Amino acid sequence: MTAWTIRKLLAWIAEYLTKNEVDAPRLSAEMLLSHVLGLKRIELYTQFDRVVEKDALDRLHDLVKRAGNHEPVAYLVGRKEFYSLEMEVTADCLIPRPETELLVQRAIEFLRTREGQQHVCDLCTGCGCIVIAIAKGCPDARLVATDLCDKALAVAARNVDKHGVADRIELLCGDLFDPLVPQLDVTQWDLIVCNPPYVSTAEYEALDKNVKDYEPQLALLAGEDGLDVYRRLCEQIDRFLKPDGALMLEIGYAQGPAVRDLLERTALFATITVEKDHQNHDRIVIARRA
Ligand SMILES: C[S@@+](CC[C@H](N)C(=O)[O-])C[C@H]1O[C@@H](n2cnc3c(N)ncnc32)[C@H](O)[C@@H]1O
Image (cartoon, rainbow, N blue to C red; front, side, top):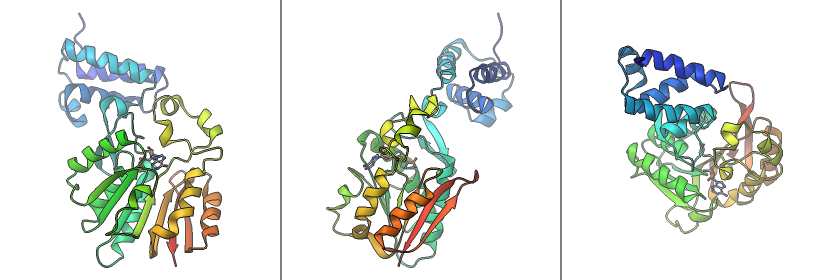
């Protein structure tokens, strides 16, 4: 009988995932195997010739099959790294994307230029990755985050606890700004960030299987042209953003001009900047109030 060592398993899983056209096959193999064995990825290499027991092989087999069927590895292992922080994820929340880290970086830079305690609002928080990363980068900020999905918020709550920021982040369930209305101690925010759903109906149909079949539709789809949430945000922003505050939005790869136009029509902002990501796609919009 073949002795399945870590070395052999990694090679076999990576080959299987490659054949099934799964992205980043070797990294995915490492994540699945380290998850099943309860090891860090680096420990796979320090225990390369360790023979893996049958019960672990059985669990691994099931996960590898699901990964081969394009179920996201982050859901299979229940976590994803974001801004160097480990976030729990479940199928109720979007898997945090590396592109979103740019929004966090700009948010932290903005907050660090300001005096006094800063109040931050993260709309559409999902697993809480943005609000938690900002809280870790700005220890004096007080933050609130909302999401329409209570199951995603339950994950966010566990992430908030895990990262030790529960005393500064309040999580509220509801539609965009709606849950903020009763909060009378803070009526306007210094910074409002949001990575909303922004996929159009046509783009949704063309999404890769690993996204369309597994990630929540509520986290992705935003009407016929993908701009529904930005439109609704623009209708309400005047009431919630401080006079010298900033609004920072993640946007789809070609939505820069349309989102800029929506923001310009509010006539609230002194500057509106569209920033591109590493792939030269429109990615974030920063609007500074006059
Ligand atoms: C694109 S995901 C972003 C999740 C997370 N902020 C991130 O960057 O990975 C959008 C999130 O918005 C939530 N959502 C969708 N419509 C919403 C609405 N009208 N009000 C509040 N949250 C909403 C979804 O449940 C989902 O968690």
